[in-house]
Image 1 (spheres, rainbow, N blue to C red):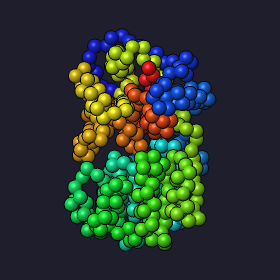
Image 2 (image 1 turned 120 degrees about the vertical axis):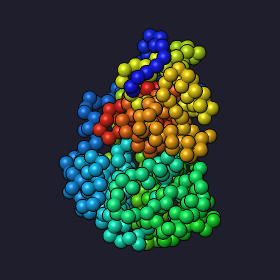
Image 3 (image 1 turned 90 degrees about the vertical axis):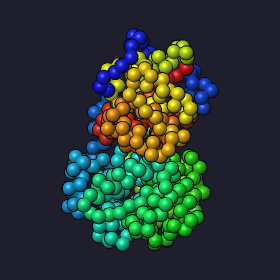
Image 4 (image 1 turned 60 degrees about the vertical axis):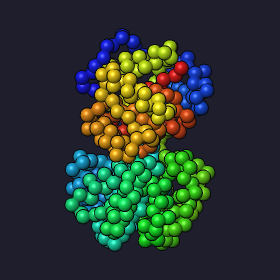
Length: 401
């Protein structure tokens, strides 16, 4: 984590996995989450983190039928071996098949769909790709990865997300981009303003579909599907499939290839532990002393409310930590600037509400700390999925009163 400041009060966290089943009452799914942590830890097998991600077929990206310029761009990111979801999804996508991709978070879903779609557009520059994702941060990340993988290929994109100028987005749409990436609310705004016509998109991606359903965008997704052409390639990626999602799938995909590389609820690379809060008035002191310990190099802390996260960020900053926050009360430009600082390690502690728990690919996060208990088990799974990504080990710590 680099240099740390502040006085270490000598506290050592109590990792209590055996006597905590009654904890967490009154915090939504607290008991369920604690039971799940205990269960996951008791059944976890000791294995190298890389074994979770290395393709069983031992392919390299060079084996895929991708253009040389795309392979060069992949090599520039120092990727050589595809993850299981990439290994199994890229070939049928290159063949133009519809796909349902089910995989744990952090397993490379974005590249799994971007690489074959970049190839598709390269071969047919008039092709248009429409990508829908639940959060602004994930949309920004997808666009950034698109720019990396399509470097030197002169492909244009438009980013349609809230918190940014509609005027600039209209300007980008008028430039006739091959890729349009957006969140449901802002896409709906553009449809109402008649600045986007979904009937021209013959390749469509619904990414993190379960999260879009969780936050109430079922109606919007069904509406978007009704406006799309029937002759299309449809890509559906999600960590879970619920009854509501099954209804969406019936209208969305045709004769799909199902790719499922999901292995348990969380990646084997994540060590999960409980921290018992002995005295609520000293909870922030416990956090302080944790962050002062060796190995807490890049830490993502989750809280329940925007107000609580902002208060905790200010307290940690006063104590000398390099910390920043993202939540719904921040402008998109502020959120993106703070994320970029965290990615560049200009700050090494990022505090967030659940707006950041889905889809973000932040490299080398050493620890996720649930300062406030998540509301549901799904929220817990997606929070801790920010660590233990792409062959790296990670640790998830959950404070329990």
